[in-house]
Length: 285
Image 1 (cartoon, rainbow, N blue to C red):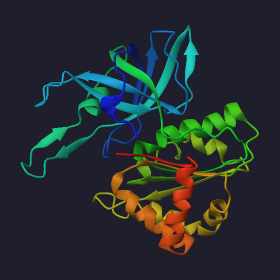
Image 2: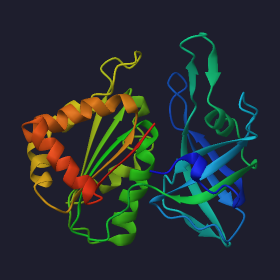
Image 3: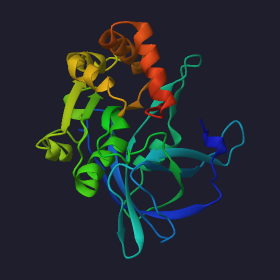
Image 4: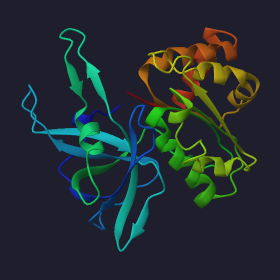
């Protein structure tokens, strides 16, 4: 596993904000879709990669820059020799447990405040822990929460728009606090619904039982509802499971897979096989 501090940030590129759009209503958590134009033909990024954003930041540790990675959220395009890349950004803040002081996320607030035409500094591209399999017969179980939909949106569009003739099964489980925050699977910006007629694709959404509280999103229940299909896929050696999202959901996901497999021992063994075969990967924040 690599850490942010291990990544090469010396190779930097200037990117201009071409588009910034709030995807969620004003009375919900702010999530924006931002399109960047990278002013260098040397910057080339793929759907299963990420890139970094560098923000000048003074901290208690004396760091001059804050570095944050973002997954590619759509198919990268090249126009006039420059790359156009899409990212999802959720405006974040947190309250310190000891002081009670409110802190705002450095990168997320910086990016959400950018306007069209503003210039930012990016790094990369960097490899994500998961890849689009080369074998078109591969099965994918994709589990995303919040902005964790970003890499999987790019995956699905790439598979059906650019790879084509995909034979394996793709199951997307996506969770949000409320239906208003269910990105790319709604009436307003539901471009993933374009693939509902694909025989190999299924999408399932899950919401928080109490969206105004901090209850975990009920992804575990949505997964267990499809237990028979998932168990069948887990019996194949070419099934991959990729997870992107919140740390607090992981425990419930483990319980769901234990229930599906019938015991903790069976799930631990199957998960170990997936990890050993590089067919299990997660990006947790």
